[in-house]
Amino acid sequence: MRASTTLRTSGGFHGRRIQKTGGSTFIVSLPKNWVLSRGLGPGDVLMFTPRADGSLTVYPASATPAESQRRQVGVSNDDEEEHLFRRLIAEYIAGYPLLEIRTPGRMSARTREVIRNFAQRMIGPEILEETAEAVILQDVVGQNPLPIPSIVRRMHQMVRAMQADAMAAFRARDASIARDVVERDWEVDRLHWFLEKQVTSALRDARILATLDLSLPECSTYLLASRILERIADHAVRISETIRLLGPEPTPDRIVQELDRMAGRAASCLEDALDALDRGDIAKANEVIDASHQLTREREHILRELSSKKGRLAVGVAYVLESLERSALYATDLAEIAINRAVESPTRAPERPDVGADKPSAVSSAA
Image (cartoon, rainbow, N blue to C red; front, side, top):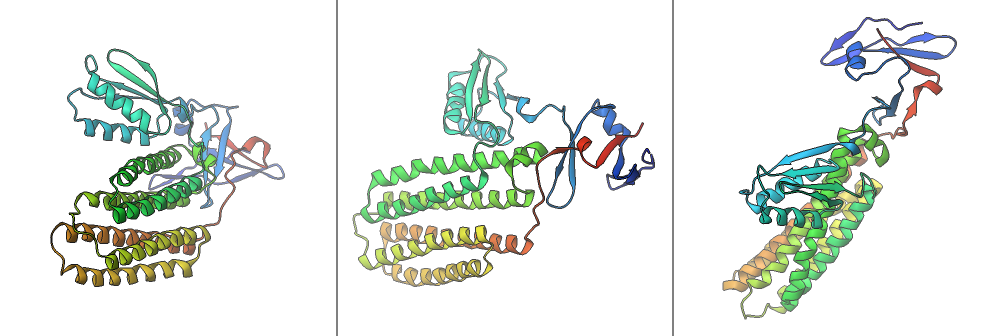
């Protein structure tokens, strides 16, 4: 039995009635234009990926995978180094496994140096080929070498260590520890960009999404968590950099102790917020938000004490205080995400693609 060729169209969605043939096989026709535009015909295999919302993603088994796509990037030797680096990051996040970076004429040594620096700092890109006008980068690690939840956990470990070392650099006014914190910020950034690349690739290709073992809402949640961790790492860097502002006057012990206590509470807020996110624990998430608000009130107390101080010491301590408060507020953002995710509680559907031919349902093409 063939499905009806009657097509319902509304808002870009195409509707077809399900037909039953034989004792247990269900058939639905496909839009003719979709089939022909992809060069499909009788006997070709379609793959199905069930989604958490109950829908199905359909794609041809013979379609060219994203891994074989090549992206040509036109740049200029006159581009600012920082602008060029940002452009390369954007191309990296887009998820193309081959990037051909090309200039109109001979590529300058400065442009090549920016590209090499980019390849060294990112996860995956390696220089595959160089010509007078172009450099070709290849992603050698593939789409999903690390589970996204593991990347977020790794980022948290690094951020927690950076926070502790930033406060140690502030207490001891140790420039070497401060420089180390600044350098480690790149490690957090590269993990965040790598995670963003994975999510972007999953949004573009349903086959990649299926390998993540995550739903689209979960991908969005982890991407937001990654962004928050990256912002907190930036504040650890800012605390480290304040030692350049401090003058010869020693920081009063009482203020140092207060700041240490606030730093410990901010770190606890972040850890508890991530735990609430993993467990869907609304009560713990609310505790994080309450603790963060309490920390903000304590900040006002220290600010009043700073009003009696002058010069570089007051400025430096104020910067540290602000960064600690911002870190706690970012943990609050994460706790709110945890509450939202716990309330949504989406029902996970199996995401392993299967072929319709060996199931009781089938898909036929309408001529």
